[in-house]
Length: 262
Ligand code: MN
Image 1: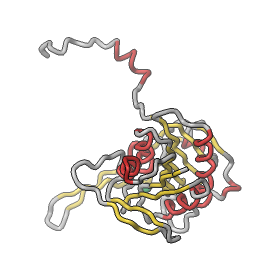
Image 2: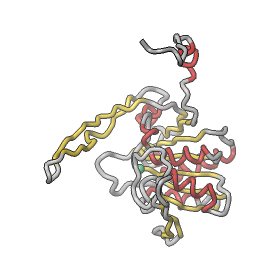
Image 3: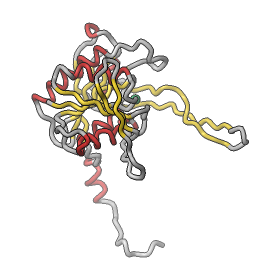
Image 4: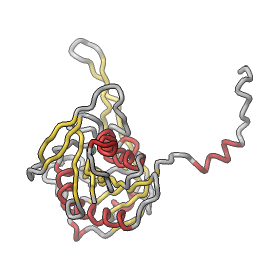
């Protein structure tokens, strides 16, 4: 069993270290993660510059690899042969903040797992529902042991192609977590604000600021499960087709493309 552990917070993140240590219960663990924080970088592929990889050590002295590519680049590099041994499972995290609903399109944690699914490797992304104010003193141990339980299940009940699991864990001690809930993606409420300022030369620049996003705690959604103190497990597929719209779109009056627009 060969498990690749990666993240989007960078190779020095405590959530990655906790996850790597826990995964060693299941087999051989390789760590290949970005050399800096790529949170909210989305699914990216670095094509127009070289990607460098360097050897680093984790706090327990075990070796790891850090690349200057995106989280999804790290997964691609590993799968495409940087790591000589085939990878059986990719686990991405533990992100200090939840990845819910529309967050998935932004999330480097989740898109690293998506990259694995592109290459047919089973994968999960795992995030802790941490508080906005501080990542100091966050306990990643509950989420790390939960990641091991879920990894065992993924290896026992293989996922279909082009799918992955998105996991969010309440920020609670294990004995206060109510259990697992299988969920759908819920709705985030983003409170982004455009902030316009001037640089010292008088030129405007922009910053996407605002408050931490909220969520709509609907039943059976990822947001709802976390709100009730459950671990949320959402099955995700790479097929983004809105299947329910196909018949509707077929009924639109599609013109001949060669017809002149009037
Ligand atoms: Mn992150």
